[in-house]
Image 1 (cartoon, rainbow, N blue to C red):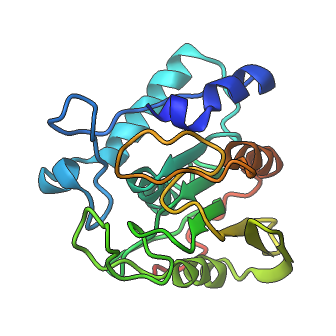
Image 2: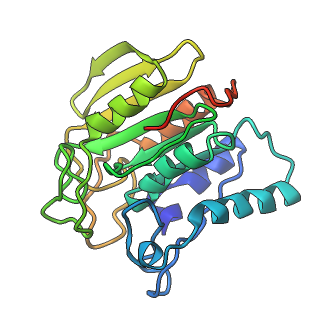
Length: 242
């Protein structure tokens, strides 16, 4: 489902990288599987599934079968999958170079300890009724949990990384804001002007998602960002927790 939604397999064939689509957990035969990301979501949250350890096991399995560049391990995800990206940046920063949360956010109960820096490219739409840009609980939210405003989340990472504003730009489809710190760690926000709860440039898969904007390819932008942001620095105990 994620493969069709994002088109990352086609991109992997074109660019020569390995792409993996790990499943979350649930009782709906792969139709609505979830990740345990702080206060969300569904089966994984209720059963307190340790998805961080699961991802570590997935990485170990990949490393045992393939020769990979450990400075170029990345994660991308939509909605609860995007929340999982934030969790991985918090819990496994020594493993991941960059992450790409799409139509996702964090919660005010988050505890995030840093022992390395992870670059982030973030996509959120102003008209997302599942993950409201300004936070809270959206009209179509599947989880009755207060969510942080997107720009509050961005500010958390910017402040913890001591990053500064590098540039702002606008198009007919998004407003882009770019931050970077002295270590080269980068945070980019794409504030989408439409598209709702979707993967920009992708396919609408689930009935509760929205029709994606077709003029912007999140997959292309994410891969270019990943290529430009491998793991360059591993700073042990360099930052305090959120």
